[in-house]
Length: 497
Image (cartoon, rainbow, N blue to C red; front, side, top):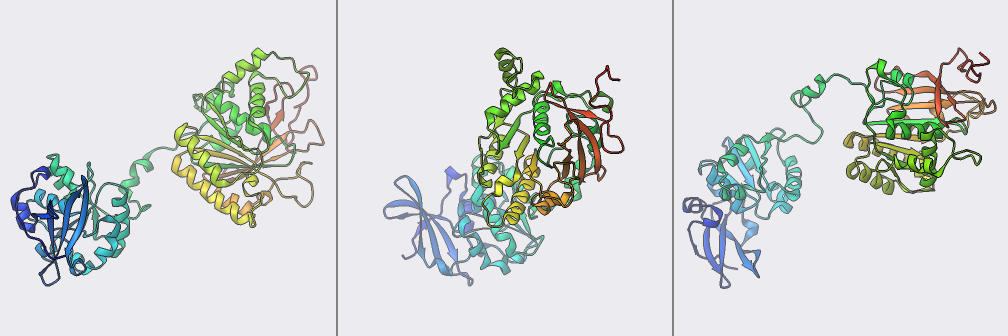
């Protein structure tokens, strides 16, 4: 299509003056009987070779080209002398006119010929011209395509050359139309040098670095809180135990005291106040949610509801269950389930329901059926680590253990880090690892909690505390460990003593 003729005039709806349009040769013409805008494009020799034709079709914005757009440079490039202090790059011609006008028509402003989607292709043809300026200020639209275009083009230029402007409105045109030209100018001159995601400066981090380390949330057992400084956010706690060692009861007591902090041991001497009730999300592959809820209710009222001879009323159970309403969020996933689905559920609970304590038991269910379970587990653990860091919550996961050489775990054999199924992945990505040791052949044998990894402090390793199972309440209670990691006098009554 041949070049079109038109007249230079102010574009009042956009807040653009005639002087602005005249400087850039921006005209108003006619295309197919419709009023149109004509944005001129020049080649490297300064010859007019193309026009972008902007018009309305069926009340919708439309574009076409007149002339030879393949020979064209950037819009506004003819008006910009190479080698200046700063050049501004916008997405569209109207945005370029708006930015130039706000800058008093004294600073070079260019725009992309084909919008954000083709930004890298179009700018790559003119890198030498743009690199001649001390600063390249990208003022793309404040939407997803605009942000993605910034990421696409920064690699074309020297490090430290690209600056990114941030606007309170969508683009520079909207800023001018809203009579906020002064703010637009501030945004252009105050544009920040581009840094890839993840790179920080001391100024970025100073306030966080100055913040003193605070105690975490209390564990159900005071000694564990003291040894580990409490339950931390952005942590993955990996638990491993043999069958019958108390891991299920331990995990449920963690859930219980999160939702019912009134059942916590006193931590006043540590200066830790009792926290408010917290929401809990559970992904228990080997237990249905109704059974979990009933078990938690029994622990809350101090009765083992899994025993048929327990004396309890429906009213007691119902009242206990009601205390968990709005706090207990189980995911019904009995049997194996793929990680992508579980991850989506976790993100929903954290972001939509405000859950910050997630329990997964067992972790190995997530890789059941995978051809390479260890590789799959490594990917899952890496993903989990990113989730807790990004969304500021805590995951407790239970791992099956491999068969050890020597004494079986079910007979009190020591739990080692390498016994965790997929131990390399768990050790690499978890923040703390705890093993539960107990000889279930001796009914009164205590459970020893053994710290295997403490990334933050390196202190909570070795035997941490002993726990005994209260056969009436169904809860684990703390006991001191003797030299053999037994709880002395744990089974005697007051009369025996």
